[in-house]
Image 1 (cartoon, rainbow, N blue to C red):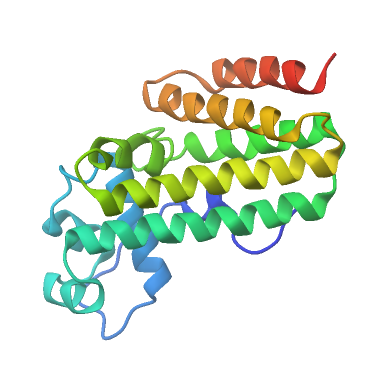
Image 2 (tube, rainbow, N blue to C red):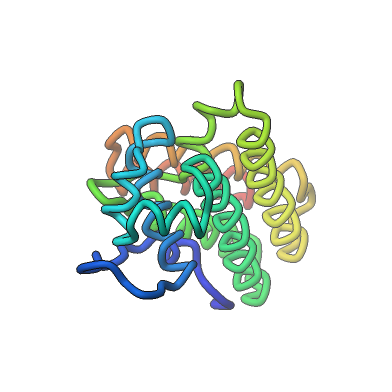
Length: 206
């Protein structure tokens, strides 16, 4: 089931750097920035916060990524690519329907339960929605993530033999987004898994 970077790995904590590095890995910096945005949201995260999280001085962040909004948009775009890589691994696993739906939810819950200060859910669902109404680019980035999830889950369910892959995919995606919010609200993994199991029964049958 593994192909490329899993989204849960992309959300894994990034070790703090000491001092000012002469060079840095762009993906590592994006992962650290994403974690900080995912914890505090876009508006509440300052450039000083991002400098502390990434270990990169503010002038270097400006030079590499532009302003805070540009860095946030790039983090959303990389999340889109990490999701695509995760789904590629799911497609390669070629699972039957029930196991496929379970695998989708397992990967999502594993991701949502991570975070700097506690379970933080998905950066797109839990932070981009707050900016999407007033910022067209953030809205477009959020829409791309949702469309990718809808399309890739539909593809996975069609491959697994769902009689209604699009309808089932929209149900799975909607429940997955609810799990992201519930994780951030402090619900336990056991609670999230019970909801996911009910959705598995709905989509895959008893």
